[in-house]
Length: 408
Image 1: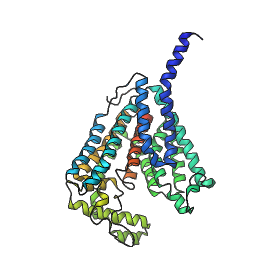
Image 2: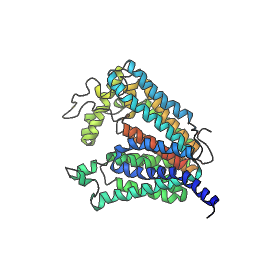
Image 3: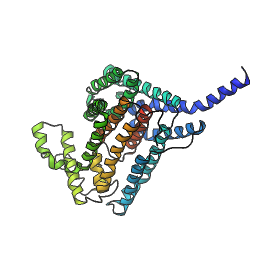
Image 4: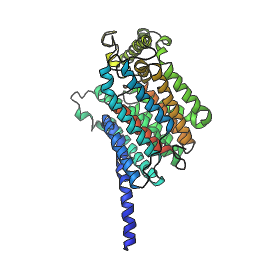
């Protein structure tokens, strides 16, 4: 072999190893989400570092930020910092703020890095993610059907209810990351994507995870609507999600009393508790409608530890609804910024999607994330924010038009 051939192979290997490392991390993302979802708080910086190294090694270190989304994320962090001036519990605000700001910075950098990858890197990483999703789905089915071989052995209480509840976080994340996988599958053949959604819904139905099922179903509905009429339904979806966030505090005025719904509709006790929490949160929002109570103060809101019924706390740590938490803690500005973030995400899905299928899948990702955010988890939980940024970056990877840079 000539020295010139060796030199070429050396350069290819030098340029390829960051892609291989990043491909491994992306391949493991669905598996980690299934078995160790909290680890995604660590995965985000790992992905970000690998993405930066990859761009430096390939000679494209400059990051091109998506200006609208970057401005909104920075504004949210800025509003959180400003709220310390009137926060009901300033120590809670300052305790959480540095970590949230760091996650925001890493997320912005990762999104910019993903949007500027070369075509060959994009295809390699997309395949790695798809294989990871397929393997994770096989493992999930094995867990449920063959005998809970990986998770149940770690439980002291091996009851079936506790086993099924262990999948609340994993399936919620899987419901969102399903859609970039659908975009990759549908790019080969649309029937593959449809089959993936149907199989996912069928398996999810065997678990106690109503939020994840709702997220997939809502995402599927939005996917079909946007695919049929992208120029109409994408803007409509963005407007409806934005309005829903802004009007979230009025939910207790629209619905019947939680006790009445609990008894008349025979709701699960957990759903009844959620309604009580939302009603209590709405009342506290009305007390400070403009500025809010301060970033990360949900757990310290007056009356939050009181029992509203037998064992239902008024506000256990957070409202389990991002729109209500934004409004409760950051006031009207927080709600506006939260609504703007979802609208801009849908605009980006339409603007940078390579075709109608990718545009529909990108919008479905946003819709599924919206559904989970409005039903589960605290808005500022590190693992949750890290997961959203990681999935957003993977969605960019799976759906973007390779001929169009992110800042065009």
